[in-house]
Image (cartoon, rainbow over all chains, first blue to last red; front, side):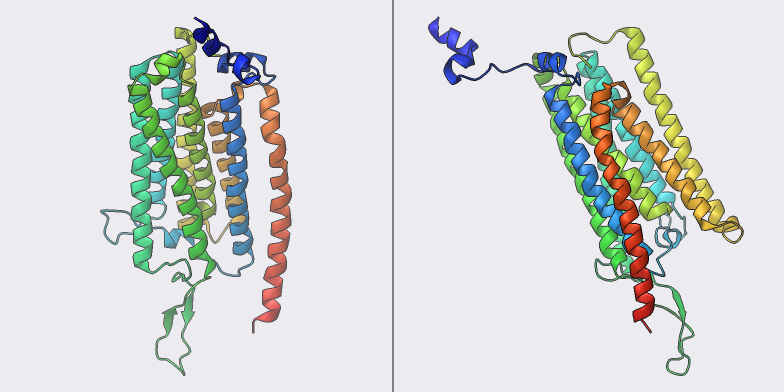
Length: 248
Length: 116
């Protein structure tokens, strides 16, 4: 009996305040949000600063160059379409895939509020498939651009230049473009892709934890909410990567 | 959002429909963006200034970001204290954008001086 009492009152042993359950923390906090969710929000805020730093430096380097590759000419390939040029086609599909995967995770969070395990599993699976599909698309795009000759320190997408006719006989040559383009493209889309990959891994964990009944036992699906916040953030960053690299 | 209660049927329905509505809006915005980009490429590039297109893209992206944060991340329904504590630090980005644009234009002019 004595042992049991100690187990239920950790402050007797440690001298600390007893652990406060998520519910109680949320109802005592002025923000009415659990500790875990609040910290996820602040982590995402800090991550937003990291991405902003990348995208703002991209903008600064781009603005300091007199010439920059036109996205409509660089990103115009699509799988299974051969050499047909479809500007923005493939990235638009990627954007839709990521938005729909985000929607699936929101619906999983809502099902979690109803303690509907089957619904959570269904929509989490949808979110995982969407994330994996996005990663597949990005892998294809990277492979395609590497095939075209784009490297972190070499950019083949330069302006059309009239050859110096008295030196070489070619009249129109493709000159290399601003070197920073490759490094910025692979760096920023790669860092975003790494976030997508992490998110997919976390969602797979969330799926199996749900499957094993872990959250049902705890009594709430807050972990799915936290995974959802991270996943939507990945979608949010893609909106700005899409803007910076493909639209502007 | 407290975890003590289980979502009722009417609440559930309204939340799900709000999510799909936001999805619809974001889909429409993305389609309009792509259509306008293609129109621009093929017909408008010579007649209208590029700045107009860029402002449109930035506004459209900000709208999409709003839908993701407010609806998907559920921030619209959180306490104002949390919203403010997240929004206020982002003010620094305004200065970052101004400062780096300024710097970039200085680099641009310096390159003009150095290169032949």
